[in-house]
Image 1 (cartoon, rainbow, N blue to C red):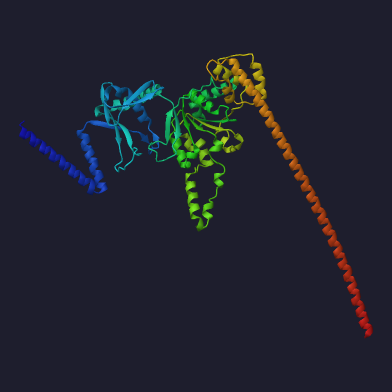
Image 2 (cartoon, rainbow, N blue to C red):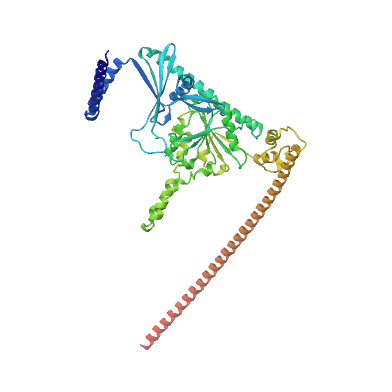
Length: 535
């Protein structure tokens, strides 16, 4: 073909493309919607007749973008092993204590895969909003998705075999490379993350072996967790959502947070640390619940301090009753009220065991508190907080665990004395551990035990002093109450006596009035008599 003929060909192709684009623009701009739909449908049919390939799209989010698609996650994990060989642009992420890297496809990248002799094309795509605005952060409504393209003659192989294959392979890769995470909820809805949760790797080393607790009680908790983990069929049989609630209560320093970490490591679950004061209302609380993955622990620490859950329903808006002169104060009050969480007790109860709590499975819900008696009974009843675990002061069995952890000592001559002192004095495991921990390199175990014994003695003296002060205060209060009671009785007796005197005085006065009445009558009668006599 001569250069002139080639140029003429490209000119014709260009003219044809320009004509097609012009006609398409006219259709999009001026054709009525119902007519445009018919035109687009026939165009797609024509393209399908000429183009022999089928494309399946797997979006990142499903259900009105409320929840991340399991299929998208599985494909992402599946392609991480394929894309590292074939893709030209990759994204790297460190997992497993940063000892290895997981590679995945970058956006708008394509790789070729093969399954049972069938050639397949994978494409990682992303759409951005049409209306762009200046921002330091990516738009929150970006949509990411994978496209799977294959020849239509292989439809049956792909739909019946390949899709199930990638789901299984993806879950296996996820299990192999999975790094557990610690999540926190976003306090700002304008945060650049699409999700309501942010996370960091969960690297807490606590486990039940090193947990300072009575072995029998510890084993009881482990058995309960194992029963729950293997109880999917049982929960379906009894008709309950696959979740379980735990209430950890006790004084500060008794190991409630360590218990949560040990449970997470034992179950191999992610941890979602829910800060209720950052949640605007009950609707946002539901959104947070939907985004929580399976195999997770939802933690609300110090639940008694998080929100005034029982008093919010009785809250009155005083700013509505103020005069017009106080508009500035009212405006500030309203601004403060907007910042406050409007989560109610009812919303939290629905979060724990309402209908929305069944959106997902294999979850543990853990509350911690220092004051169990302050919590609403509806919040901690069985069925919501199924198991109540008291985290008490350090006992001798817990001390032996701590001694083994910190000093590698199974028995010492001072143990009998320490046992006796622990029974007499309440000391938290945190305080015991701090006294057992060597303070410098080469410190002997005897010195650590002596420091603990001295601390127990001081704690005992402090406890006795506090008890004496409390008793003295109680005695003083009792004395004051007794004096007030005696004073009250004396005042009541005085009032009775005064009332009695008043009644006696009133009676005397009435009697005098009656006597005077009689005398007057006699005078009148005498007067009448005298008058009659004068007549």
